[in-house]
Length: 320
Image 1 (cartoon, one colour):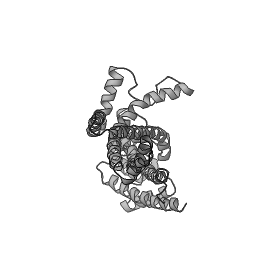
Image 2: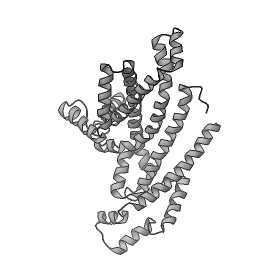
Image 3: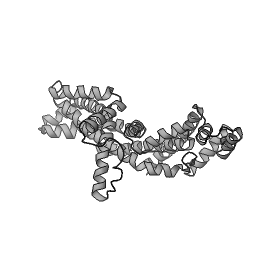
Image 4: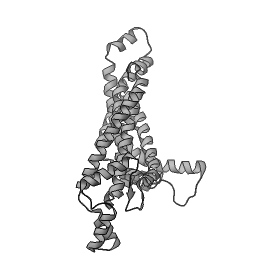
């Protein structure tokens, strides 16, 4: 509890700093939300523009706008979207489940596959498996995520017709129960793969390097000298210790996946908060953009705290 309380206080301070930086950066960006709204309404009257500024508090000095924003989020009020005409909290809540589903699937898939490939590559350094995995990891690491997403759509949806290319579920299908879950799962495959490729490459290379380094440690040689089986040596002694840096990186990148999902959700028309952030940016919807950024930051901080707790499961010698 003492550890969790300390991490919670650190997280609150970090969120305050992040909220302030986001507020200043968004206000410094080019574009005027009032001009966007007026343009959509077909009005260019200066009096109408001034009315909109007063209505949404954009006529106030920057320090007043900042204090109003910080005061609201202190009471968990993320504000009102003047573009969507709905509360920001409700808009994010409607999209958050889709983003968490995509992020969780991509995180688990990339971690399991990446670590598995890294273990396989480390068994015989320089062998054919190591060469193939290393080459594939290099390709996935260097290729842009949006390009991989577009290629996945081109191959698996357009050419082969195996998987749906866009959306969260089939439009107009009205499925329920297991059929609805299977339909969502089919739509989830391509976005998960596109979001996972980069992280698979990172985890595979890191696991291979850590496994090879741990194999030369004295405690591993001692375990072999005592007659421990090779599988026990590899999984209980080598892999368990080699996973600590991988878990550290995975905890950091779990939060990055929420932000990285913007490109993936845009390509696949996935209705998550990444797509919501992109639309809010184009529309200069300040409140919605700030709320989405704040939720993404809170998720990243939560993932980091969970990572610290997982350390003790992998290595009980680590004291909180």
